[in-house]
Image (cartoon, one colour):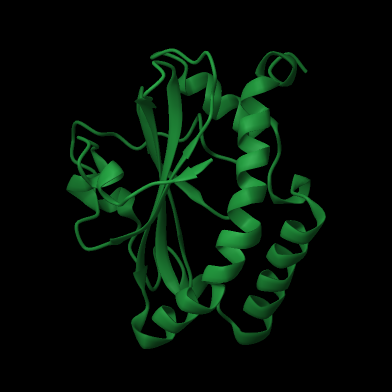
Length: 199
């Protein structure tokens, strides 16, 4: 895994740019997928899904997610009235006619993020609550070694000053625990893809 400059996302011709001009790019990361070719993005998505959701994360990451959901329960951050199609309109409402909403490759009840669209080389998911409306953009890009690699960009629209403080407070946990755990899970999913996809 490598953290990249914002331009590694913004300078590429992704469809998400049409939909999320009012979001800020928070993070951009690359994930190693040795031997990957240009048509392997759906394989990577399927392997990531087969590798499991939050419950299959390492202990510390799993604890942090559980702690966050408990805080959300206590303070009402994650109530339906604070989420998608209530406080916040889904990004699906912005989709142009040539970009239909798709969920087959991404829909997973084990994850809090909901699919917006999936194409041959990019996909987007979203989550909204009382703190933030956030997007996870996944893209398939040719790396410097010639193999293709997974890129993840996190785009956010905080809910006022509270949302900005929330994002600042969780930043150390994202960088020190969540992203490294995610990297190990996703990079291993690529290496184990044949086994995972035949189970």
